Length: 251
Image 1 (cartoon, rainbow, N blue to C red):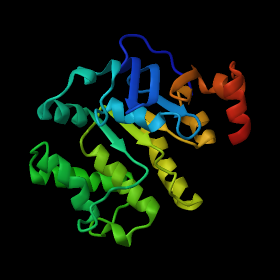
Image 2 (image 1 turned 180 degrees about the vertical axis):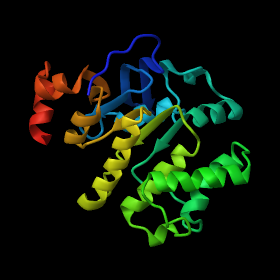
Image 3 (image 1 turned 30 degrees about the vertical axis):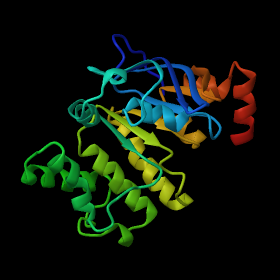
């Protein structure tokens, strides 16, 4: 899936560096994502992919470089209100569902818009019910996480992220903990969101999925972007030996 875009990117990373103590994780990463694009980040474990997502939504600060998401200069944000404004526009879904076990599916989805954004309960509940339908969990409003399969819990987590009405969605290995059957349900949900034009950055080991839904693919290794381009180019005729070596192992 490829599209041509003009104008300013919605997400820009410029020469981003990040270390945890003495361990360097990101070494000069630059990336652009335009509105409506799906960008997949692939690479071996430990190559800095998840850290990259955490830097984009301010969960991890950077040591050098710049990150812009829409009007937000993420590298300059420090105040709580600034971070809340950023995370209204950038939602992240993790590998672990992180649902509150004592809250129903509906309550999990409603919490942030009510408590963080102070939106009216009736409006939030109506939106939460629509989101449960969107992720094909109609009828599970009153189910607790422990009563749901892993795939169902992950779809509640996606609905919870969507409840903030973000401009950008970040997906961090969201199928890694799922069995093949439930994985398909989650991938179908993400595919629908991408087809609807939701700007998405996905860290994934699902190579066939990445090839099908991406507008651009970034291959990272040891905290460096080795190569990026269209899925046809990256998967069909990679230019770098390291990219070819990785894909031969995983495809």
